[in-house]
Image 1 (tube, one colour):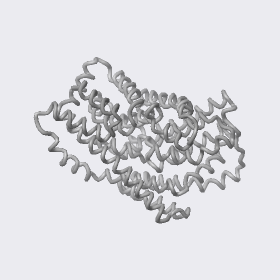
Image 2 (spheres, helix red, strand yellow):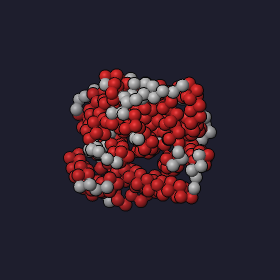
Image 3 (tube, helix red, strand yellow):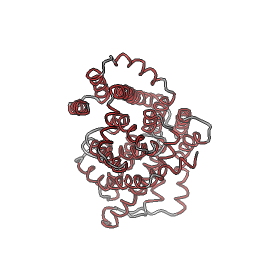
Image 4 (cartoon, helix red, strand yellow):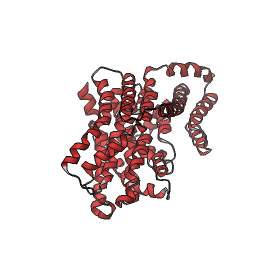
Length: 427
């Protein structure tokens, strides 16, 4: 059964079949081969039951918030403000790249939106200030991955749906790992530019007066973050209600910047509808696959197979991490989340691991998938923003940050409290 499922899955991926169709065909094929009952008859009820789940309403709202912020001229002002504070460091504006990605990730909930927005603002600085193009683009591709780890995160909402875990707890668990990972990325830049000072370009110079004057430009993203995440933990709003507050706040910010127009709203809504349709189709196909896997016994078979290996729980987790990194080279991150979660969550829970902790570990593993060739989406996003030159430059520039990501995974495996301490305190 495992061989058949793997063969169908990778065969369809190799044929470039859209991932929603891959998941749906896999579910129908396994049901036809291994189930004595016509499981497809349950599809309508499963789709309806899950489509009315209140938590899913947050997904299009967070997407709409990100679409509005993309057009609200937030990133340009935020980036300029950060450059006053960080450009004096070895590596100059590359530290601003990572910091801007961190702040924008705390409002957009999307890695692709984070990489595209900050990349568009930062890219002209490469030639202007003489930065090493590869390392500079690597900071943008890697920094963009923080969008799925730092709350609010769309991927965390979907993971919570598939594993029946708490979105607020996942959000709290992502704070410290996200901050540490951003710090590791900046440390990577610092070390690289100390070893090779020419990579760091021309350092910026700013006085304290300019820095203080720039602080108000950092307040809008921080304000939206506090409204969205703060309202959840203050008990004022559910995650879905907090997402709607985020939409209203982003609209107010766009209006303050003079960016609200009929054309802008039309573009934002159209972008939201396209992305939401894609995401929901994949999610519902994954939910149906989850149902089929449970009925035909593949989930139990996977658990038995893993237990039969005779490995310790942590050894098994290391095998899962290695397998994830290999799969991440060939599968898009969101698709990997939806396919792997139904299979791995029961195994991980059965070994005694906390599913909140595993959710953060999975976000980190998905981040590696975003920047590993040949399918790493963020690599293509940054290459698209760049518009010329070989994509190998982006890939090479991202490799040092891939090492930092792997180090973060090792730290989380060794010290689970990095993710679990804050949710425990908030309880």
